Amino acid sequence: MPDKILVTGATGQIGAELTLALRERYGADRVVAVGHRRELSGELAQTGPCCRVDVRDAAALDATVSGQRITVIYHLAALLSAVAEARPMLAWDINMNGLLNVLESARKHGCQVFFPSSVAAFGPGTPVFDTPQDTVQHPATIYGITKVAGELLCDYYHRRYGVDARGVRYPGLISNRVPPGGGTTDYAVDIFYAAIEQRHYDCFLRADTQLDMMYMPDAIAAAIRLMETDAGRLTHRSGFNVTAMNFTPAQLAAAIRQHLPDFTIDYAIDPLRQAIADSWPRHMDDSAARAEWGWQPRFDLPSMTADMLAHLAARLRRA
Ligand code: NAD
Ligand code: AKB
Image 1 (cartoon, rainbow, N blue to C red):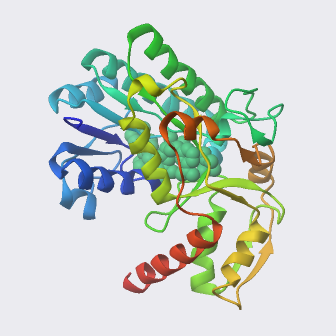
Image 2: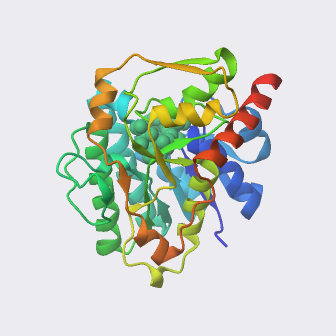
């Protein structure tokens, strides 16, 4: 069992749910949630320790890691694909210098590190169907470039300094707790809010844009399972392909119509996000993750859709 865990990006789409899951599993006082701009509030603040650190501030981050006697860092703080493309310099600063600072603290204090890469680490030249674990990685976005560089940096810190850095290439993640933070796959979450509240959605991707996706409970389980796996079982380390389902906006709309027959969808294409989506794989091969650490998703498109609608509708009624 890890002694003490730090979660950067704890208020984000993944961080908010991962922090609570880690507190549930290892004990609330062992999991420190790191916020960025504002004081943490709500469930995150009420259920365990919190602090505020800008991950670009190496000294502040290191003081937190050493002061709190941290042994495991889940490093989630980053800018996602669409916001990164709007502010490339800032994205490089946060995504790269933030990770470098985390790895340096991990090196000094002997921490294990989880780094979430992305399907965005692939790009033109990568096989789009059954994208292999080890293949061409020439992403066309600044976000994807930071993800490839991040995977390489994690491998370097492991090889050079023995830092136990691990990670997955997540596809688009779907969740009902925290809205997504400015990615290309955000449509697959936005559509549920619109379906429940307006029975209509204007989608920013084309109807036939097929992408890999995953429901948040599976994403959380993947991170924890990989981190708990005996290191001797791992051949790969920092960029495991993982996926749970793949669909197009038209197929997701059809799945929602199984529950809300009057739901309608139109398409108002955003050229930036369409170009990003068109540069990503249609379906990753995640057999390495299945073989090396037993990756197995629970949710497919029908079960995710039913669960999402039920939980989000209840959450919106309470709000
Ligand atoms: P998010 O945008 O919801 O959250 C990012 C968090 O980072 C926010 O809490 C923000 O406050 C924090 N942050 C931003 N700048 C910071 C700084 N300078 N210092 C400290 N914190 C800062 O993102 P997410 O969806 O939760 O993604 C988390 C990680 O997972 C990211 O690395 C992302 O690239 C990766 N990922 C996400 C998805 C997805 O679909 N959500 C898919 C693949 C990979
Ligand atoms: C994004 O769209 O930027 C993220 C991702 C797949 O990394 N959801």
